[in-house]
Image (cartoon, rainbow, N blue to C red; front, side):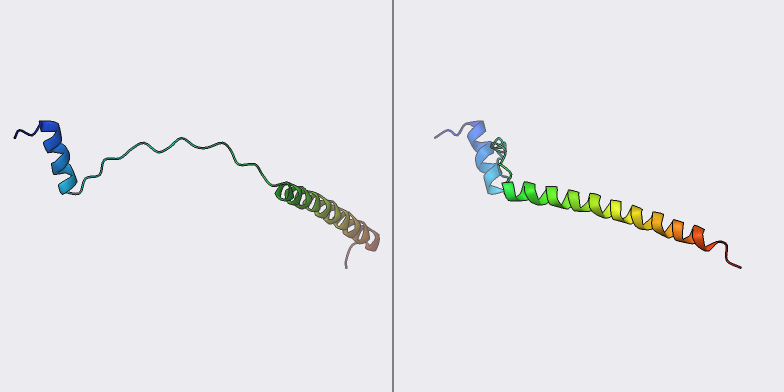
Length: 73
């Protein structure tokens, strides 16, 4: 009974704990994004824009108020 060199190497590799790795499967098609997630992102962006506008208005009002008061003595 003769054992081919390739078979001998394969058996030896498996005996010492080597694992033959296979390439990973190709990625599947991209998953669709749920509409609720898209809508939520749009709402958050809009809220950030509104907050930035309100903060800017507050800064302007505060600056106007300080200008009306005049310099502190």
